[in-house]
Length: 208
Image 1 (cartoon, rainbow, N blue to C red):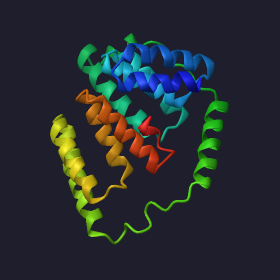
Image 2 (image 1 turned 90 degrees about the vertical axis):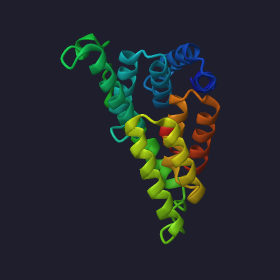
Image 3 (image 1 turned 180 degrees about the vertical axis):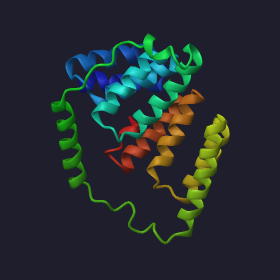
């Protein structure tokens, strides 16, 4: 399962969404409800504008971990896209069935996450609290977030880049910028940001 999931990540970063979907599907047959495969396949479906299938995968991931920002954001984006496409009343009727995630999968995911968190020393926030750079970085990130709502992804990238020059350890800025790069189809930069986020926080599932 892991081999297919990793190859799917390579396909996704090269923009080869159909091969990414194939590998994720095989990976999910071998390891049902693998969260990385679900999120990668959802991102590939979204890039191909197959919003119903993307919604199902994001929603399934959300059943496994209801606090997952990538799944929340994805579900919200797909809801908006499908409402525009099929109307506010009809879009749910056209969805493929959403699988029910067994309790054992959720419990196993929580247990794994907990043990990894315990093993990770939390030293990222140690020296940042008092820094003026961090405050500047936060303001720039918020300016970037405002452009996200307007769909101005190039301006978002500029603001996030300025923010990271002030505070290069803020994981969510990397993952947010990666999503913008995906929207702009700059796949190599998106992957670099995901890798950086995972380097800073190995548990960060938003970085896929």
